[in-house]
Length: 288
Ligand code: PLP
Image (cartoon, rainbow, N blue to C red; front, top):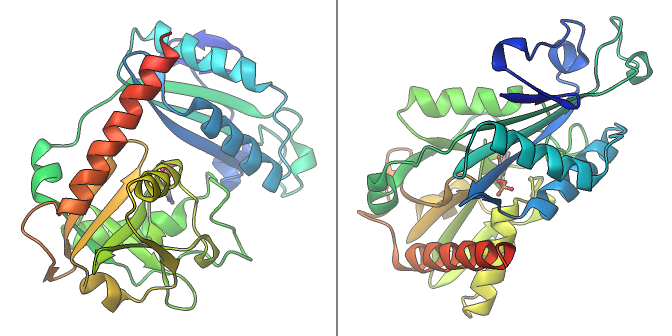
C-alpha cells in the first residue's frame, strides 16, 4: 500500500502523471528513513532535511511536519510493518512541458514503506569493497549535494562504476579532487587513532547517520578531523566505513584493488555498537 496525495492506495493504483516534473526533469526531493520496532528513527531530523531540501529548490510542501508524520505511520500500519524502510518523495507535480516550476500547481506527495532487509551479517564482520570513482561529485555551486534531490544521475554514474568493479559503493571526489561522499552514504576512515571524514564544504549531504557518528565519537573521546582528503589518504587508512540510515555503520576493508583490513576494525566496531545503543535508547524513549 502506498500513500499518494493524501490517500492510502494499493500499489497498482498508485499512479502519477507522465507529465509529473519529477519524472520529466528529476524535479523533486526525497528522504529515506528507517523504522525499528514500529518507531521511525530520527523522524524529526529527516523531516527537517526534507523541508530544507524543499526550500533549496523553491518547492512549497503544503503539509505540516505533523501531517507528514501521520502519513508515514499510516503507511507503515497499512503495510503492517515494524521493521521498515520508508521513503518520502515529493515532486514538483504535473504540469506542461517547460522548466518553469510555476507550471506545476500541486506537488506530488508519496510515501512508501517496505520491509527492511538486513544487509548480510558477513558484510558487517568482514567489511565490504568500495571504489573511488572517476565520476566527480556534482559541484556544489551547480547542484548542491545538500539537496536530497530526485536528480540522481551523478550518483548512478558513480554507482555503475562500483558495480562494474564488484564493489558495494563508490566514493566520489569533488571538483578539486577531495573525497566527498558515496553515492548513498558518507565516508569515514581512521588513521593513527583519528577519525577522519570529508568536511561539509567538500560538497556532501550532511547525513543524519554521519552527524550521530560524529556526536558519538566526540562523546567517546575519539579525536575527529574533518577536511579535504585525497584518494591516497583513504587507501592508506587503518580502518574505514560508510554510513547511512539503512546500513548504519558498514565496515570497508577494500578500496579498489587495495585491501585495508581483513575484518571490521576496532574503532568501526565500537562506533557501530554505540550507534545501535543510541537507536535502542531512542526507541525506548519513543515508546514511553
Ligand atoms: N550521501 C548521499 C548522497 C546519500 O544519498 C545518503 C543517504 O541516502 C547519505 C549521504 C547518508 O545520509 P543519511 O545518513 O541521512 O541516510
